[in-house]
Length: 108
Image (cartoon, rainbow, N blue to C red; front, side, top):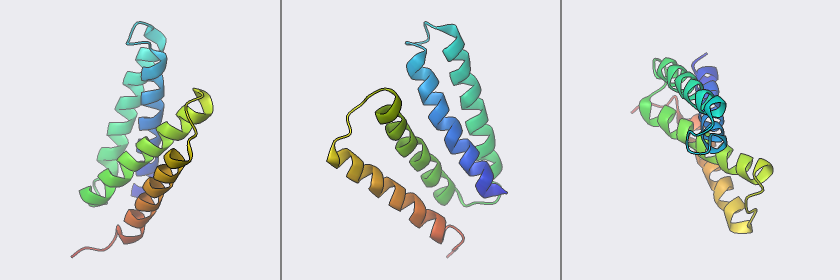
């Protein structure tokens, strides 16, 4: 269940940063509320995941989901650059997250 909590937490990060973008510097109150609520969801589920997943693994995956997800969403929704190097580096983040997941249960 901890891995599901971590996934929900990462998706909360992506939605939170999206709402921040839409809030126009907290000038639009509905997206600003969405950002705050998404932040709460993200941190709550991260705290639940940390009960069973080592912090080094959980935090790395959480930030990876947030980073890669935000860049991908930016490219798809906000028409940001899809430069080849940008895609390469996103692939590297995803590979790193997958690697952390693979070794996540290893202690020592």
